[in-house]
Length: 408
Image 1: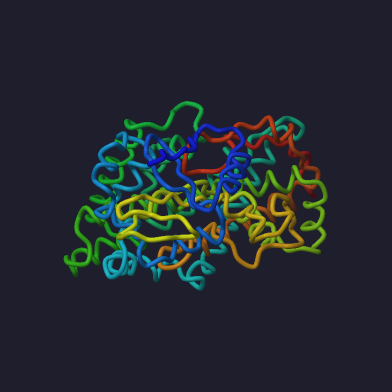
Image 2 (image 1 turned 90 degrees about the vertical axis):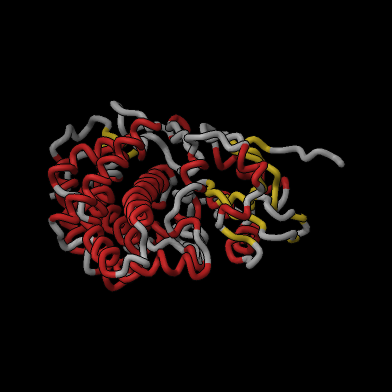
């Protein structure tokens, strides 16, 4: 049997879209190695859509070939994702059981009710930016794109003020915005320990927040969520509830500042800021790759034979620039032609619960930023920005801009 030639996916790649172009050219399902794990990569839009919805593919880890699973290095992003026991890795009735307690808190109507709070937090961040030197570079990722979704989700889930400073320091590292603390096992351990402490404090002193709601559900119906599932759900909600939105806002600011003519279109009102958000989600997805779905039995997808137990990696950033779906100009950012659909938030039962919140936060943030600073410009060339070195995320470590004077 001919041995497969595998592409090595490098989390530290500085041009991930070029890598994705090569992957798409290699086929719809491509053998890859990511963080030491062999898998198939779903590189094209139609193929990824099939993978996300195919009845013979599942997120349940028990279907992964035990031999391949045993080769997974510990402590990697893949390890953290595939061993999570929240709704992330459940399907069918089990997924519905774990997701249902959260669904009511993230309906479009409930999220729209947060608009005044998000606008107030955004306004405070704009005020802080306005105190900085107008003609010196400012890192918008660290000073604006990151604290907004972090503070929103902290309040939603119920992080007490006494713990917010340390919680934010730890999540700064996880989100790759900290200069003082790097992400790693010790950071994750402290973050988890602090979250456990917060859960216990909320158990003793309930509030009007998601942690309290989940604790009450746990106590009223112990069969709905185990103690471990309770923690895993809150942990997932806190991290996933803001880190990807950091990337979305960062990427949208970069796209508008580095693509000639696009910012003028949204500022003039010819195109809404929501179009810039949707086009960013397609063109520069906040998530690069996401593990895994496993073949429950032998199955053929787009002419490729998957054996039972093999893993499939979802290539979200690649699917957004697939010319077969988005045309010959798929690699061009164009707010006049936002996509009718994209897969940045997934598809099917695992569609991202936080999608309405992420969209709202990004739209409010972009409108406020570009209204407040009419002379804002990029502080340097796009190709000088370093990518975040993580398999999951797709963004730059910084977004340096020169703000210019605040509008009067």
